[in-house]
Image 1 (spheres, rainbow, N blue to C red):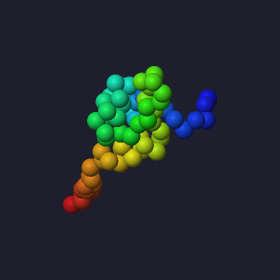
Image 2 (image 1 turned 180 degrees about the vertical axis):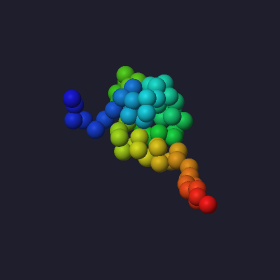
Image 3 (image 1 turned 90 degrees about the vertical axis):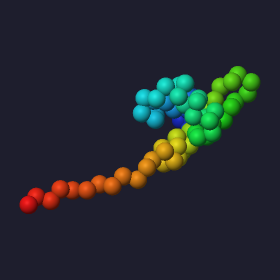
Image 4 (image 1 turned 90 degrees about the horizontal axis):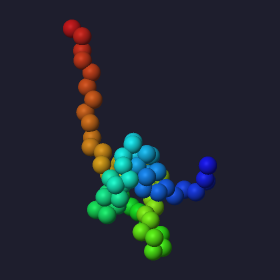
Length: 70
């Protein structure tokens, strides 16, 4: 296993809950997920910190209530 902090789009998709490589590239292209293009190979990389920030940016507050038993 590699110790590199970088993930390919496919690896990032798995990290983000079984999203597709295509989904990750679309989010990077749209500017919602940070990515880095490496060389001229059209390969895009991202990292866990950037993926975690994407999740936080997408999160909406949720109100959690409990039922009172009468």
